[in-house]
Amino acid sequence: MKHIKKMVGAGVLTLALAVTGCSAGGGGSEKPAVDNSKGAADSATLPTVDWTKADYAAVKDGGTLTLAIDQLPDNWNTLQADGNNVSTGQIMDPTTGGPVRNTADGGWEVNPDYATEVKLASQDPQVVEVKLNPKAVWEDGTPITYKDFAATVKASDGTNKDYQTVSDNVYKDIESVTKEDTDQNFKITFKNKNADWPSILGGSTAGTATASILPAAIASDPKAFNEGYKAKPLPSDGPFKVSNIDTNGQVVTLVPNAKWWGEKPKLDKIIMKVVSRDGLAQAYANKELDAFSIGTNKNNYDTAKKRADGAVQQTGGLTWNHVTLNGSKGPLAEVKVRQAVARAIDRETISASRLSPIGAPVTSMNNYIYMPGQKGYQDDASAVIGFDTAKSEALLKEAGYTKGSDGVQAKAGKKLELTYTLDANNPVSEQIFKQLQANLKVVGITLKNNTVPSDKFFSDYVLKSNFEMTGFAWSGTAFPVSSTESIFYPVKSGQNFTGITDEKLGDMWQKANAELDPAKRIAMAAEIDKAIFAYTPVIPLTPTPNTYAVTTGLVNYGAAQFQSIDWTKVGWKA
Image 1 (cartoon, rainbow, N blue to C red):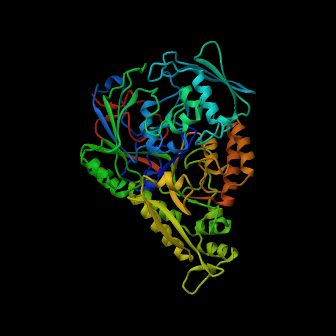
Image 2 (image 1 turned 90 degrees about the vertical axis):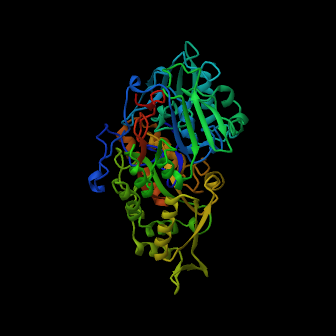
Image 3 (image 1 turned 45 degrees about the vertical axis):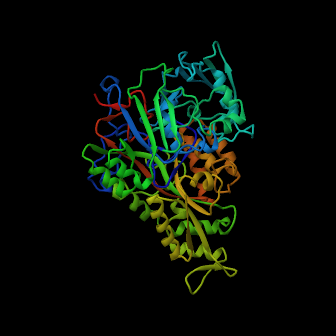
């Protein structure tokens, strides 16, 4: 349950939810697994958890789990800007936790390994009381205390610009973290109300963790926070720890944490190795991987289904693909051009090409905050960016462009050419680019391709807003209102790569985050959503389900929408 939205490459929808950004949405109780033999219209209801469940006693002692990641971390501190990607979250998830964890329906519960009590003690002023499990310790045996939480909040609240944080969502609304009767018991007092307060207290969504807490020594030192963990992992406070990082072989090995105080994890070892997107399915078919996220790649899906000792699992998700527009310069600085680009894109056809081949419900993403199926979701997109080539050309005309005899739009003698930056060796990214290119050509916009190394895509291009147009996926949390803010506001939020915003959003989000009445909050979120579409910094494309290929016998791991993974119970059925 993290407050931060994670970035996912366009083809990999590794988080259940998630962006967090991101896939098909919503709470609700668990439902029967989807029948992938049905067409999309018959598969409209996806479960929230589709992995094979087993009680702790029914899981075999020992064994190894081998999984794929996109890259080794640029920074192992997931609260630092360069550490905000899915691969880092996947690696760190078995090594971290917090006082709360996600439930299958998108809610939260106290995680007894980390806390004996978490409660909202007062609404005005807003006060949250936390009682930590006194057995909880860091990897070196040092007790976890209120000092760690206090230092983490102070590092993340945005007041000290020396910290290169991902987001100050929720943290910025906190007045203080104060000790009560012991170092393990503390209260969080808010200066501004924030309904998504549980999001900073731990958990993870479908196996991609963001640290909810750092040791005070790290959080209190900007240099340690920013640079101390570029080449080594954060200290573990979870059931596993990183034992080896093979930078040549691109493999990370995790083993049980000897200082872990909870139930002993069943697995002896977890191996996470870098596998290129176009090699995932074959690696699984060759039994080099025990599970992988299929995303929306038909070849991956078809190959995965052929493995005799495996199965395909599918749930709703919280990940959505999109096109991010850099509105800070060039033609895209004009809102009418951004909306003309959006109007020219046949989003429904793109969604169908992504979702139909994997047996998933076909729909376009028509909201920036909520996912289809989530309470609060409504279509705010169609009225502003619905597919309409005539309207697209009319907007370009209003922006001063004229379509020449060669069919290309031009203004003051300069042709309208845009560049789309995408990650190499990603079949989904390549297909989406070709679809965008063909769509834009119809209205007279030339779209050029800038393919960059996949391991540099985020660090050198997305994070630095070094692009004109680009695409990936947002993967986020069960707290969509507060977690979406940093994507759009302010301009220098650490996650707003568009270079633009609408200043009124700050006040709108402050009021929405402070509203504790769910119905009123949904209404406020709708107004925020409409305000964003009005200036169109991002073109949402496809909400994506979580589709996993999983080896037979692997339990308590696989496709899930919100549910946190209990890594002590992941393993092989006895």
